[in-house]
Image 1 (cartoon, rainbow, N blue to C red):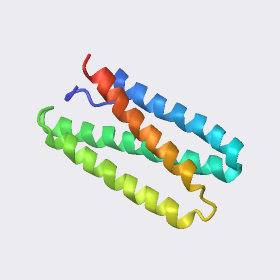
Image 2 (image 1 turned 90 degrees about the vertical axis):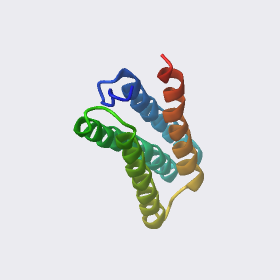
Image 3 (image 1 turned 90 degrees about the horizontal axis):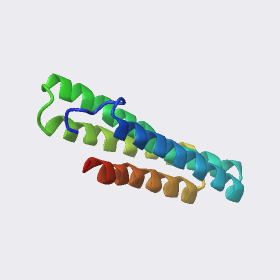
Image 4 (image 1 turned 120 degrees about the vertical axis):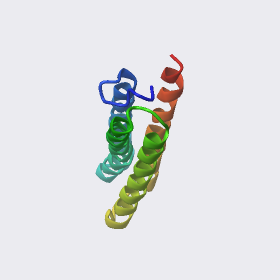
Length: 126
């Protein structure tokens, strides 16, 4: 899988669809429980990981192309960029969204983060 980091990779596409599905599902649940701001908070939590996953794929793909598809450095660099993006995005949301429903944001964020790892573990061995 080291040389197939792209959105055409079925495993990565499945991860993104799963994260989007979880985000929508949790937004509906949070909206029912906490109203409009709960739904928005859950959406922001889930989309943080969706966008971070897209950034990971983009940065890793560029790195692997320039490194002739070998080495772990392009993947490590992509993971560092992904983590920095997550930290900045969560910081911006926490600072500027006054009506934030924190449990909705963080639960959706954590579940979508775990979905990324779960698909990698289940599909990566194939």
